[in-house]
Amino acid sequence: MNAAPSGYGIKPTKLKDIPLEKPGGMVLQLHTIDREGVY
Image 1 (cartoon, rainbow, N blue to C red):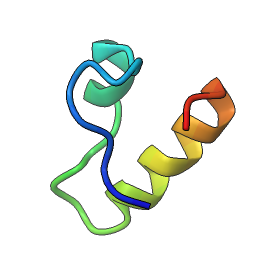
Image 2 (tube, rainbow, N blue to C red):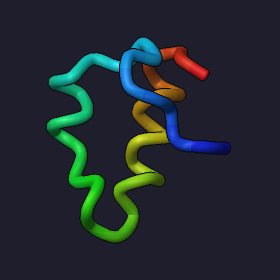
Image 3 (cartoon, rainbow, N blue to C red):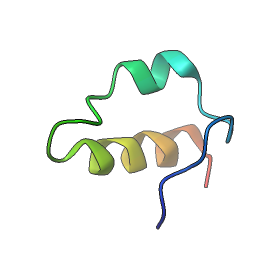
Image 4 (cartoon, helix red, strand yellow):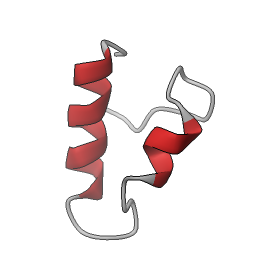
C-alpha cells in the first residue's frame, strides 16, 4: 500500500502524532488509516 497523499482524508493532527521520520512510522500510519476507516 502506498503512502496516502496530502488531503486524503487524514486529519493533520493525526499525522502530526505519527513520527513519519522514524522507522516504523509508515506502519503506524497504515494502522491509523485502517482504524479511521480510510483506505
